[in-house]
Amino acid sequence: MGIVVSLLVLSALIFFHELGHYIAARMMGVSVEVFSIGFGKRFYTFKKWNTEWSISAIPLGGYVRMKGQDDSDPTKKSYDNDSYNVKTPTQKIFILLAGPAFNFILAFFLYFIIALGSPSVLSPVIGTVVKDSPAFEAGLDANDTITSINGVSITTWKEMAEIISQSEGSLDLVIKRDGFLEHKILTPKLQDAQNMFGENVKRKMIGISSAGVTHKLELSPSETLGYATEQTIFASTMIFTGVKKLLFGEVPAKELGGVISIVKLTSDATETGWMSVLFFAALISVNLGVLNLLPIPALDGGHIMFNLYELIFKREASEAVMMKFTIAGWIILFGLMGLGLYNDINRLVG
Image 1: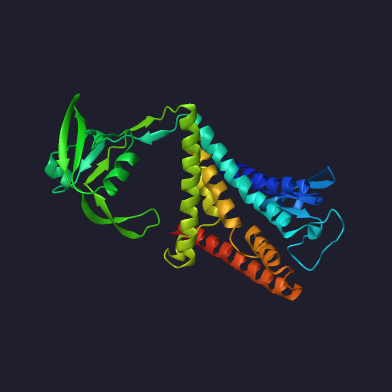
Image 2 (image 1 turned 120 degrees about the vertical axis):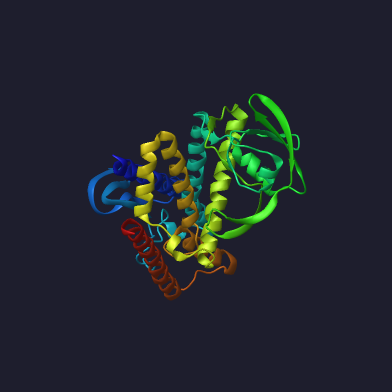
């Protein structure tokens, strides 16, 4: 069941990405010849609005083929009025950006739905206290609840951790213990830690871990919008940063995951409930949006790069250059997919 849900989620995200291209292309007067979810042999096809809509055997991608655009051979062009090739670079960029934009919009919508469902968050309840740490010396204990820091009300573990990591000097913590409030004064220490990318960093900490207690967020309409916006920006920033670190070698290539990882993680999320599935679907949607913006020919970012060239220099790149870059792009793309698949298999057998 989990694998079925995984494939349905992935297909839905791809559908919305391609739908963005489709709508933008039609707005610009471009004829869309094929709208396909999946690759390979087609097992279901129908024609509507002068477009052939297909579901293919391998549901691990999709594409919109516009008149005059062929990624397998960029030299094949059409100059009819409803062709992609006769549009201005600005119009083409609009069409190309629409796919990733729809991924970000979908992620925002999913986070909005999650916010309406009152998502669970970690409460600022202490689980363990490290011996000889600032928290230990200040007298903090297991099951204490931190209610405020320096007069700022605390409702989640994340809020507490952010204030501590950004603090200067000593902190005045108000804790709730056995129904009574107590003040505790302590000074965080700079210690070795790991960030979300597995990198060793220095971070101010007080020596406590979470008790794993959670509570549901009850959000007002404005807070719901704020939550969806914040989560979409956070996910986008995280993935942009992760891609940058991967490209510059700051994160090892073995951390790259492929489609097997996506299916497995989505399947695991299915077992913990619909909220987890929506969280992961939103994250994958942002991931698709970010990765498609990479300046690799055969991806939206590569096509945008060619159109920016035309916009700046008032001429198209030569067919020979486009062909060479496109071939190089496919090699890079298949190389990354192969590396992700290799890492996935290693994780499964390791």
